[in-house]
Length: 113
Length: 159
Image 1 (cartoon, rainbow over the protein chains, first blue to last red):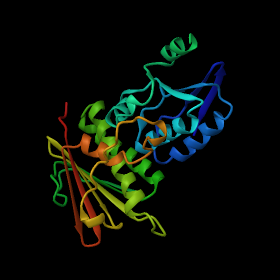
Image 2 (cartoon, helix red, strand yellow):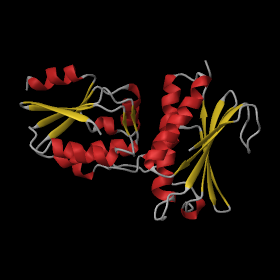
Image 3 (tube, each protein chain N blue to C red):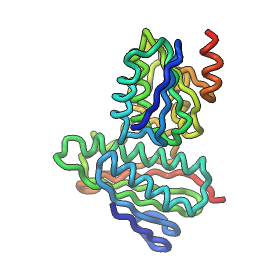
Image 4 (cartoon, rainbow over the protein chains, first blue to last red):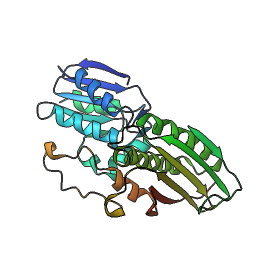
């Protein structure tokens, strides 16, 4: 599971470099991001713009990550492609996360806080 | 993994004009590869990227359910046979596995989640059946001998 991380206080950006977050990698995804965000600042942006497929295991891993980071830190999502956005909408998880169309939108909105 | 194209041949109780079968082991990695093979086979139907994304998700969710539940507790993962057929209007997906039967031989209902008031109470799973029901036009299940047979239909028009 390839993820890249970059911290620009007060934000950490985690970019998923894989096209799929599915049952085959969900556990690994959860573990990797947990390690990467151990010393993370208050807000973590998960950049999903490279991801073209997510299943309910992948969604579950993202929800678990958010729960793990709360309440001190929040996880926001950026760059949802069509198929990823569909899964969030159909499961109503779109109402649980802050979603930004692109990483730039997220940065603009969050860096100014 | 065994993939067969069965164009213009009658296959079981599914319509016949475009059809193929893929047999895969019940592991998450095999599911990923099996779904990729199916999507390659379906490409020639020109159903459009939106519909194909729906089909891909439905296939993956269903196969993941079989891996997680039907084969759960078995010493080695069993086989799943996915038969896919298109009759010009509906794409039919039939999944046969030799895993344990669904409780009472009926389909689980999609889980209803309460309003999400508290982050720690958010569900981390159980989304699968909800997605399958939401994205398909027909869902039917029968237990045939020691096999589970699940058929899903998705309305899809070819361009």
